[in-house]
Length: 170
Image 1: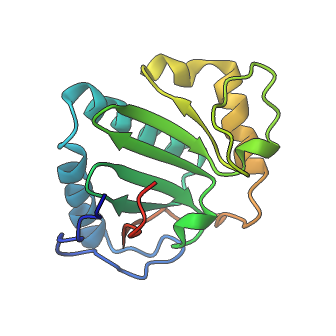
Image 2: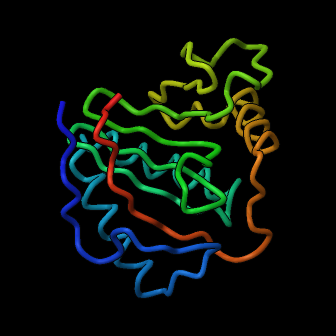
Image 3: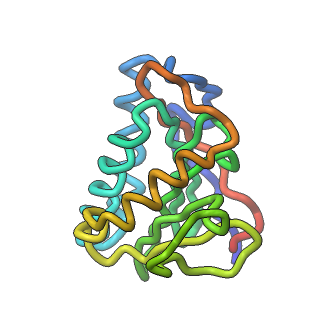
C-alpha cells in the first residue's frame, strides 16, 4: 500500500506545542480534520466525533496529532507534537473505528477487553459510543493516562497538529 501525500493547506506540519495554537489556526485545523473524517461512513463520522469529545474531557490539554493515510486516519492524543508519545489514539477506516492504548500491554484489563498482541499497543473495536460509558473502558482510559511517561501540560487548551503519515502503512 502506498501512503497518500498530505495535500491539505493551512496547519500542515505546524510546530505547535503546549496548546499555543491561535484560535484562527485551530478553526482552520478543525475544518481540515472534519473534511478528512467526512470521508468515512456517516455512522463512523459521528462515532469519531463522540470519541474525540470523550477523550478531550479526560485530556483537555492534549495535542491531537493527526496522521492521514490513503485508507485510514489516526488521531493521537499526545502531551507533545510527537504522535508516538501519544497515550490514546483513534484509528478510523472504512471497516471501523478503534481506540488505541499506546501502553496497553501494561494496563490492568480484568475484563480482557483489549485486543492485539504487539509489544506495547492494544486496542478496542468501538462499534458504538455506548462502549465509552462502560466503567471498565473508563478505567482503561484513566490507567493509560496514568501510565504516560511524558506529562501532559497542566493548563491551556490542546492543539491540533497534522503530520505526514508514515511510508510504511500498518
